[in-house]
Amino acid sequence: MATTMPMSGLLEAPVRPVVEARPERLKRAFDVVAALLLLVLTAPLVAVVALVVAVGLGRPVLFRQARVGRDGSIFELVKFRSMLPIDPRRGLVTDADRLTSLGRFLRATSLDELPTLWNVLRGDMSLVGPRPLLPEYLPRYSPWQARRHEVRPGVTGLAQVTGRNSLSWEEKLDLDVRYVDTRNLRVDLAILRATVRTVLRREGISAAGTATAPEFLGTGSLAETGGRDRAPV
Image (cartoon, rainbow, N blue to C red; front, side, top):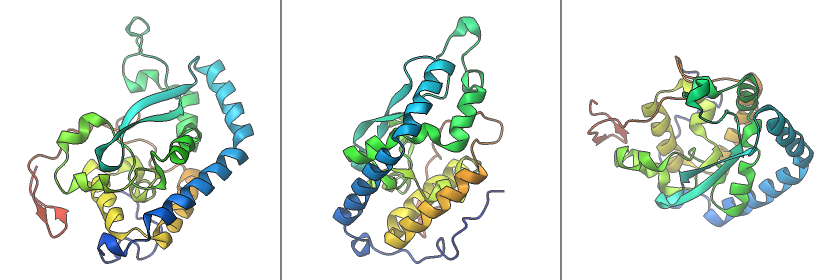
């Protein structure tokens, strides 16, 4: 069973119209200042991780992939590599085959996410928001789930501190939309604090039976009922 988010009362907060959320320009200003500061402070660590990845996994040290941003726009996500390249001749096909002990460590400690601060600085992402997912998932969302794209995606988010990959896709996407409707400065700061605790405890790194997380195949024909998807798959 997924763990409960360690922020009392947050999930029970009433859904409020987006117009009551803090101005986007204030959130953007906070993201820019925080990302720039973190990039400067972690520069020595970034250099060390880059060297370790180059030696342990080879080049390129950065993983680049198209992801979906705000309003369905596509951007290039940048992270440190945590897997070996696909090579059928060596039996490196699945994520489980390609994920090394170094890669598991990088993911468990979220060190692979350090370059993503560049995406925040560029404006592709925010520090807090729904995690950016693959473009091929776009036609698989219900109208309710697609509302996750009303805001910039985040380095961390409500779903990540509630259970991360131990949650089902339906649970994660529901939490994403919940964040869209309840976001404010207090919520963002609480999520950032909880993220530190989640990373230190290394909770919910991968889904049961997978090296990372299963592919999102959609949830069928879903109807929005009472603010959530209730129709059967």
